[in-house]
Image (cartoon, rainbow, N blue to C red; front, side, top):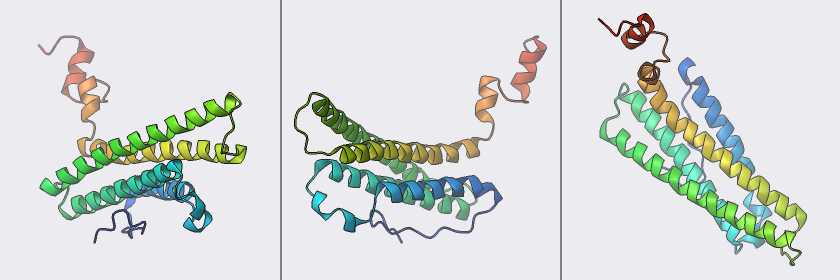
Length: 188
């Protein structure tokens, strides 16, 4: 079943050797998620704060991305790597949600920059220094989440294409094009 945005972690399958890196990235993402989205009991009074709303939106978006990536990986495993149309749809939704969380992150950065600017001008701020530091850390963690999600998304294509990019750029260790370049005879 799909648990999009519910905050409930979907169980992961036992990971094989080739999936250890992906499992490690997912584990790091889960750790970052817990830091970014502390227990709800700690912050009932911040519900009307727009920064908190953005933080929660970013957390939901990251959860959605992770769930979609997991679902896509399971779909690809079950279909021997092709995945078909459903895989393409999920990949599109993943990229769209990544763009959305990037926009949310920019809004958080802009809001933080404005608050820091007001504080530096000596204007009265509703935030204490601790709150400001917490927001800086939240913005940084959100950025880390985005980088992790992008890495998980790109990993899918890098593992699928193998060494194709290296062949195209000539940086691969083998292949016909690299032999032609090394011999200098242009293939004839």
